[in-house]
Image (cartoon, rainbow, N blue to C red; front, side):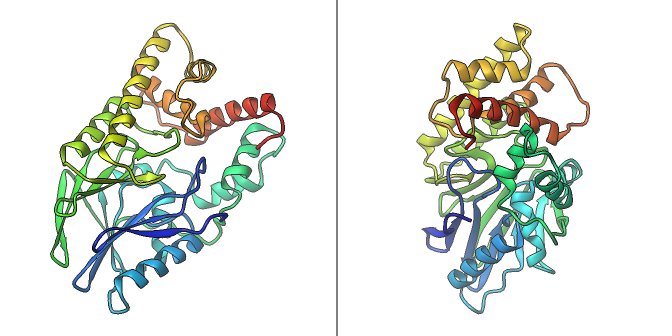
Length: 324
């Protein structure tokens, strides 16, 4: 990694682990809640090495006598779950629908092949090497949650009330948020991205926006997004405005007969959302929105969606000069 991960205390006993730099795939925020000798982790990082870094920081913050044996998963993307093998025997909480996304996402072995066995002279191989080549996916075993639920699950961590609210399908089919009412903190997972365009896989966008509105209704002081810096309610309102505008643009361009990739290219040519990184990911989220506009219930090929983004990034890099 090119940046040292930081475990930031938000309020007493509540921490966010932030490994990410801007415009990077796979560097997901995680959380630690600890009080009176108990702990709850929120998500785990992408790889064993990243997970070891997170767990070392979490153990130092929680204290030597606190066992890290309970995890809440905000969703099933690998960059939020593949570190679970470093916590054998842990109780792992997730929504029941999260199991469905685990069946859709490429395995660590498939990702390794996409990085190393594709043609670097073509958009997909070029893109995977740049964004995923820094990760070591060897030896990863994908584990399933041990305890799933629908709706809501309440628990305590050493006297700290914790609410798990199911808000999917939105980013994926199985999203949840972690609400700490006394601390006024919400761990939002990939319902919220800060600084970069999101890559929403399930949708529709109105459900992502509605999940964000649910977060605001909880009256948090701080929101921990799945990626990027901590966010205030005002920042979340700006993100909702982006989602709502993107929804409107998708409806308009779909009605004009534009494809999702064409729609992404048009919005980028207009200079829309210039402050957000990874602009090529518009192709992913717009493709997801188009599936709903077309009432298309076919199984989604996630790699195909990334290839759409890769082709846009390839073309933009070619116009700009040297790739990355």
